Structure formats: C-alpha cells, structure tokens
Length: 224
Image 1: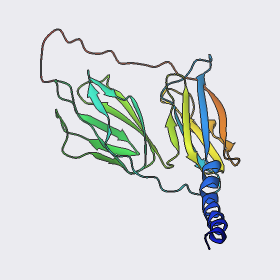
Image 2: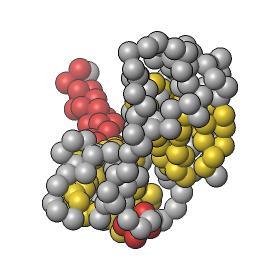
Image 3: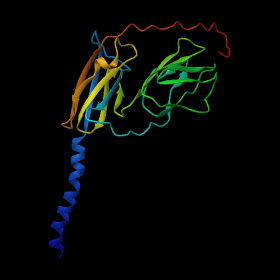
Image 4: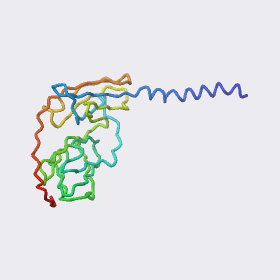
C-alpha cells in the first residue's frame, strides 16, 4: 500500500505549494530615486503609489508613531503616515512647547506642555500637515498623510523603496516640502505588472530652504 500512496501524496503537496510559490514570484517593488535639478540626492521626499485600476487594499495603521521634540526641533522633520494613524508628540526638551497646526488636513493645538501629552493626535484626512510651535518659531515639521498604504520616504541617497506590491500598474507621485509646484506635476504611471523590481527616477526643482533664526539661549535657563 505504501508505494502506491507516496506518489499521490507527493502530487498533493506539490499542488499545495504552487499558489505559495506563485504569490511570492508575483511580488513587485518600486525603487524610486529623487534628485534635485543639479543631480544631487533629495532626502525626505515622500513617494506614494496608488493602484491605477482601483482602490488600494486597506493597510494596517502604524503603531507607536512618534514625532519627538529634541533641542527645540521636530524629529523627524518629515514623517509619512497612512490616513487614520495616531501620532504622539513627546517633549524631551527641558523647556515647554506648544505644538499646533492650521493645515486643512489637520487642525489642532496642544496646550503648553512638557513630557508626553495625555492623548496622541489622529490624522484622519489625507494631505500635508505643517507643524509649528507657538513658543519657538523656527520649529517646523511636516506630516504627509497618505490615502494609500504604499509609500516610502527617501534616504540620504535620495532612494525610496515601496515593496510587497501586487503586480499592477501604479500611479506614483512625489512630494517634498521645498519643491516648486505641486506633487500632481510629478505623477506618472509605473508598470509593475511583471512582478519584479521597477526603477524610476524623478528630478525636483527645489526652492531655497528658508529657516527662521533660532533665538539665542544666552546661557540662561527658563521654562521656554
């Protein structure tokens, strides 16, 4: 009996393995390279991919997302999240901050505080949220709230990798806080139907970054 059953068992196991192997082979990734008009890599650019043929699958909300306040700066300066994400704003400085935003995508104002606020903020609309501090005018940060779970931020080499994609055509766009013009001008279709790595490059024209001068400390401590 055993010699007759073994070939049948092997056939069943092989058939069960085929869908798993096929699913793995079909996974695609988009590798984006973003440079400025001088060919230099652009850090902190957000690259977003949206399936061209429909709504993307729901993504899991990120957990423990934090924008810290250290040395009177927002860390990180640019954060990309999926719509519906909760963000905490701990203050690790020895002075108090008052974090706020007047952006249409999210308006909020955290009263003057130190330590960790009692509740995180939910970012429930897609768009760009500009952060500020009512006490320290030079503190500027950005939250890019994406409607699609397929996004990434460029590193110091100007590269961002969006992986684990189903083989489809994606409409991909790029946003950076200093770019001239809107992100819609960067939109293009990327064909990832072959289920492999697809390389794409963007060149952005950036406006000179305007930084508000930090207030001198004068060597004196204080609440602010």
